Length: 258
Image (cartoon, rainbow, N blue to C red):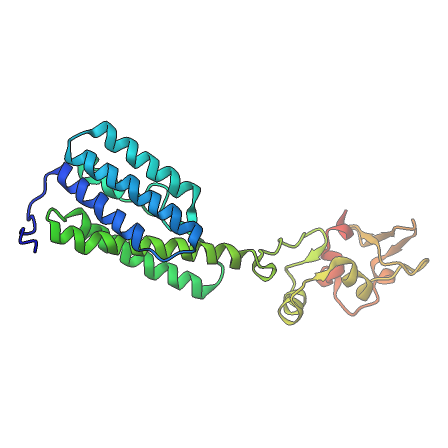
């Protein structure tokens, strides 16, 4: 029976050694497919080496063991350890900021809410861990931080898959040379159908050349219009709508004013 009382105050090297052993235990206890379990066991072995080196004050050996553990985590992201997860271990010695995954930027609101919840909790745990100078406090907060990071990494995979779905791809902004994005009629058409009216569609409804019946007509400020076929005509002759002059959406189109 172990009757040793928990240490209430840890020196920096002692704190780093304890964090390495706790993280090694988390790695061995993490559920994963067989191939990933093998990587987790090797990570745990490197962390045990780091803990022993910290206890011997062999800083170079500890740094090498942590580097080996990081390399395995980078090669096996399914272990759900961040590439810089060993910063949790080295922090008592180096004062390095505790790791945080980059924003996931999910498109789906449900995934965004899950990310927000995790990101709200993780800094609170980090704050407690940063203040943990005793053995019980480290045991209480370090596994919680690693679990939240695991959940964030798992969520990151879900977000990548969900964001890649065709329905979640951002739609390109409509070309103002092709689509009318300003008139009330076109905006209502976008609300109803999901697409804006094309300028050439609008022109067909409002103008018609007196010679060729085409709708590719350019209007000038002198109330003169010239069709693509070369025929000149007054605005009144070329318009087949009841619009009043410049109020006509066909005249407001970019091609009509060139």
